[in-house]
Image (tube, helix red, strand yellow):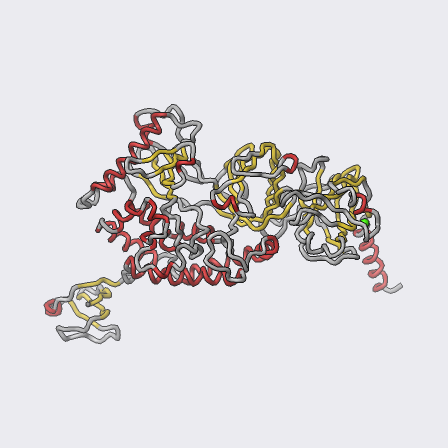
Length: 623
Ligand code: CA
């Protein structure tokens, strides 16, 4: 026997050992109809099939096996019923160790349309063993399975390798009994939540979490936004700055770039705002059904790593303790909240923190009066003394950085919903963070195209600021000359020394596109809306790439527009009023940009170099 033959035999025997999986048998389980019972998925006959009931969109039909003891699954075979391969596309295959599948995790996804009359195999690379395995219905809810096969080996296994749908972390949640989450008040305590990350090598889970819906208009869309509340504070992923119970899953249904919030949050950080919400792209599986690409975000609340100000207690009722911290939202929906007030001028304000359970009468009274002081000062200010007037009550710089963020992202709702906080012992309110930008970047038919407006976007009659906050913003931007000057300084600094340029944002967006490339493809199979106008979309652009392209060109145009509206001071160039007598001073010499000395006392307008005898030089603009 030659060496080559020996190696070949060893290779074959290794292959046989590695493939020593068995086709597994067990007791069929599931939700089948009487004419398409669960046994039909395991009878070896491709003409008989399982099919479950479907109740108006929300139903989770499934069919599977009780294997009797935990098994590590290595492969799944699937044959759809006649012409139903498309209907089980995106269906999730799960494993569990509780008979009610409350702890179910995904082990595979049918990510393509598969043919009938034949078994298509999906490799499984999951090291945890499961006693119960099943195939969930696809997005249509029925689950047309003619045949299902599971392969693997007995064993409890471990958690060194789990299934992550794409390169993004996968968030899995199962409500008790797979009950539908019907509203933002419909809470499901005792839910199971798992966060699978690090290419499936890391899992965080909680089987006592609470799930509910969230959002205002976004709740009415087919792809739902959710809130997760863990039993204990957790750092949900290694890059999350806070350890907290509450986290939000933003659906981004009307935003077909899936990234408007993410871009805007980074932009607000680059604009120098103190706090930008945490935001991570994830894939979501809700009660065994793939729901698409989401953004996992902070819940906006007061705590280290979020709005990091003093957390009040019900004992903080007088003296310095009563002065903060408070976290508020000027909020057109305030009337539907539990804890809110209207200012003397009628501005609706929700008190986010202290929350409605804990806030005392004294605290509520204090913060309402303090907000009234700000408004009274703003609307009575003569703007003569820059250290006084309303600026005693408002950190103007934080307002201006918020203003810049809102003008650049073009969010219709910047002043429909405006967050602000007041820290203990600090007499001033601070504006921020920005939040909820899915209508931003020209994604709102009511204001589209934003390029049509000659003035600042907030002044547009169809922008939500027109409803209430317009006068507030006008007082600062239109009436206070020092604020206007400061706005130009901040904008010029961001343009000349910061990231505010077309290339930076284009590169940033490209990096997000790379990050969600796999996930966005699955998302738009789940939600085939690229050719449809949804929510407030001005139009359907037909592809993810076109949607991205529009946001990029919007930002580029908007930067130019704001250069004009706000005013851009050239980097390192001082504008001077030219006085011909300057040149009679022997200590001063003027050169043009070619380095030629200028001798005339009437130089043409333009940029020159002004050199002092002591060697210093600066660029000057002569008008
Ligand atoms: Ca069959």
